[in-house]
Length: 167
Image (cartoon, rainbow, N blue to C red; front, side):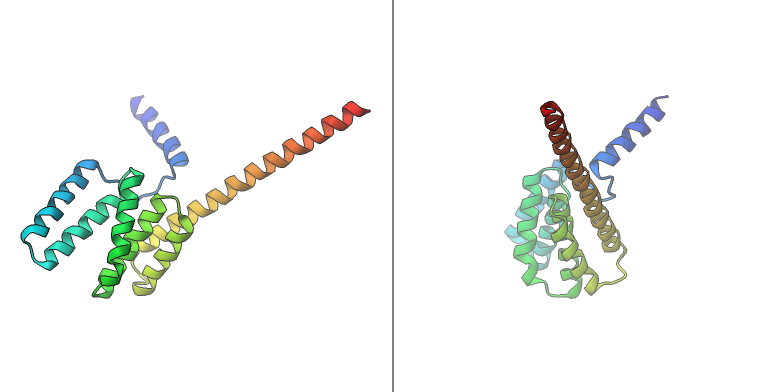
């Protein structure tokens, strides 16, 4: 019985929460990545510093906290011009797209994931993210239409009620 209730709760949360397959990251992981970056800045090679910054960026854009997500976006945007290979460019574009998706900026996320797919057209993670973003954009459109239709209905009902009182 508990399993059925758990599945029901999970499906309701999935519907209202978006139900995407993008992983979340805990504050403990972010703290560990921050320590790794601090250690790498003290004595590590440039490559190790960049790797630890990428891990921290990944953790930040996958956080549940908007301030972490925004920090991850800022870090990635600052480092985007320093990408030395198409692989690095692809990874940073993807993580930026995840960050913008998490922050609710779906159009910007779609734009970035499309740039990512120009570099690697068959990359499954990016294709999955693109579908997730497009589904969310469509869902938001349906909700917007529903809100508009409700508002128009209420206005029409108000006008009809006012007209019936005059007669």
